[in-house]
Image (tube, rainbow, N blue to C red; front, side):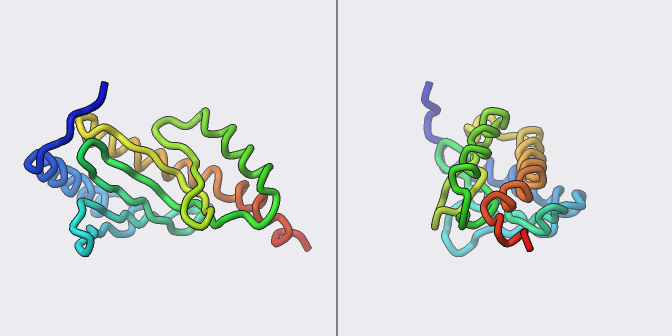
Length: 155
């Protein structure tokens, strides 16, 4: 069943709830380094800067649309070598991820991306999304980097 488009009033209310959740993350979650709202585009979009260990810092983008909250994070640049092995590695792990998947994006870079229906967006789901993306970047970044840039790790 297709979700109906949210009205402007519903989107404004949902954006306010997302912003309140983001503020709680900014002040209470030690891995959240910063939160910014995209003021320039006029869209309901936020950037969450996250401190990691395997990958020092990365950004998660949240974009509220008429029907869905889209989210994504940049994992790594396009691989220089072992593309087949890297893509196979990531695709095999896609089957174990819930709510997101590895994807090839701009300039063939690797992203984790997903979306929720607007009616499913609440604090618990936002916590799950943030925690899952954090965990998956931490888990898969180094092995993916070593596959896609193997010759830089030898010598």
